[in-house]
Length: 153
Image (cartoon, rainbow, N blue to C red; front, side, top):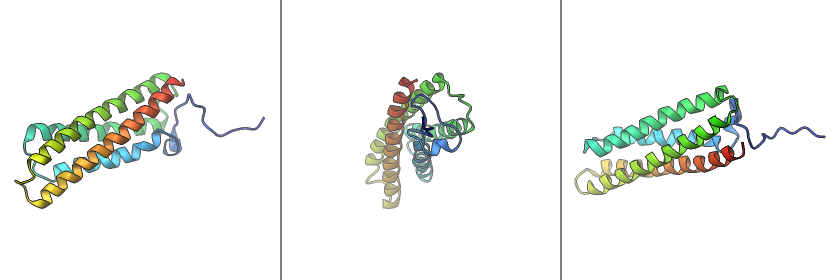
């Protein structure tokens, strides 16, 4: 019987395997787009503070947690446990929901500021909205694929 290097469906990758397997390959786009939301919102005046504070919380929280999650998976701290597969699906589902809510709030605030702010600030806010929805998309796809992986354990 020939040996195969393919990972069985019910296993979690570790090491550099997270850069070559689905859904773990989405860690990097999630970090990039989430970091861009954080940077773009922080580079403008955070006004009104309450809804944009939520956007900042979501972007910083998800960036830090995704980075820690990626480090745990890279180091193999999950020990290929089914509980970690379930936690992976749950975390990414929560992050997708958070980014959906943050993107909607950010889009609403941006539309309301269209005539008040200079064009450059408005363009930065639009870019932040686009990146928030892209981050939400990657978290959502990661959630679906993680849930499929979890069910195969």
